[in-house]
Length: 335
Image 1 (cartoon, rainbow, N blue to C red):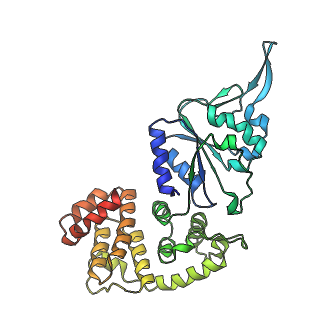
Image 2: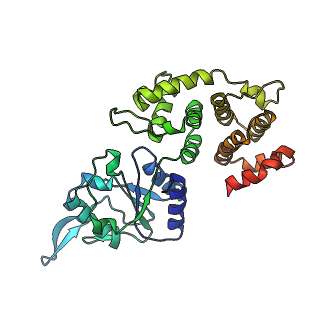
Image 3: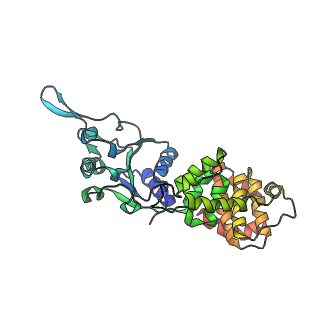
């Protein structure tokens, strides 16, 4: 089973190695399949064409027939297919198409051509879809179509989501909450239209940012109720700005939910490499297990890379004895 992070790394390697095999990403709705394809295209300065095959008729993909020189019948390729440059042709929700439509697409997927059209050399075909067990309205993929893909089956993953959430500046309370209740990062509820997923927690963050108190419309009543209880904990945070300034006497809490909340707030509110370092020093000053420091530093590394200040942090921390002691675990996280 793959994670979003591992799929991202694999797809990047496939693209950089110019391997033109088509890829299919399977997984439940809302875990970031579409987002990762967009991210890869952006990171590689590539164009992205998002093509929903389920919304097309066979003639839309094969092209409209016309007569050339009054002798030959040919197909005029549709304008939405790429003709030049480099990019990703993304066939999202492919298995929501009818089997007949997927059959039309299979030549495009394997042979990189359909009708009189051929996919340019520097374009890569990536598809994504939900599984039937995810309550998705999908069609059974014909075996000849399935055999034309390299397949990756993905599941929700907290570390993958945290990387995305930190880079996208998701609300700090929402980033902290799944540390405390990881099972609520994704919990499909067949009896409710709203349920927690990486995507719906992003919606919840947007609701909080515009001043709405309830996130039940995004993640459902059950997850919202537990999240509201966590907000009460978040209101008991220690003096975060005081920690950044090295102010003494600020005790490190021992209650797990408050510790997770504190780590999330330190990462979200830090503005400089020194802020991140002071957060580390404060956390290590408490009588807590290294698991919390590991949790904090894993998020710090993502934030440092996103802010492009990792080297500044290393210069500040490299002479510190506590950091040196913890360094092998940090290097393991970076590998």
